[in-house]
Length: 156
Figure 1 (cartoon, rainbow, N blue to C red):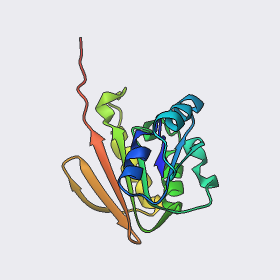
Figure 2: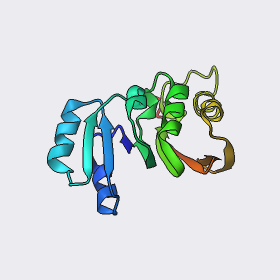
Figure 3: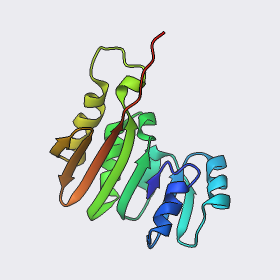
Figure 4: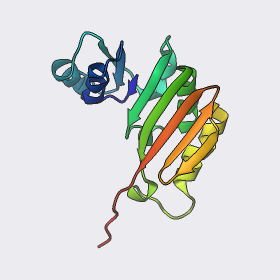
């Protein structure tokens, strides 16, 4: 499953790599229309669904991915719990988020630590290791990877 699949390029890539089936979800009707027209395959299904509503899905996945979408989640803790419930045993969860320095960080607290690390443990994941900008969590043979994308912040 690709959460926030946008125009579908990742879903198509997974299909081309041999995925038996791929579900791409996105809230944007226009993006899904583009995906269906430009990045389609027999084993890809696109569905209009907000990331906050993924708990309505009645299936489990071997791989859950998302690229630069979770920054928009109002309740990241709930989203992580929902993703965890959608994962089969030994499934993998890979997503990327913007580095907090690339967004309006006000210096009050470490936003990245608050939103990611604190939300993972109640969701069922626990910290295995941290290497540079990649943290790996695992629980019950479900794996979670996060890649922090570094961005330059320019000040005038």
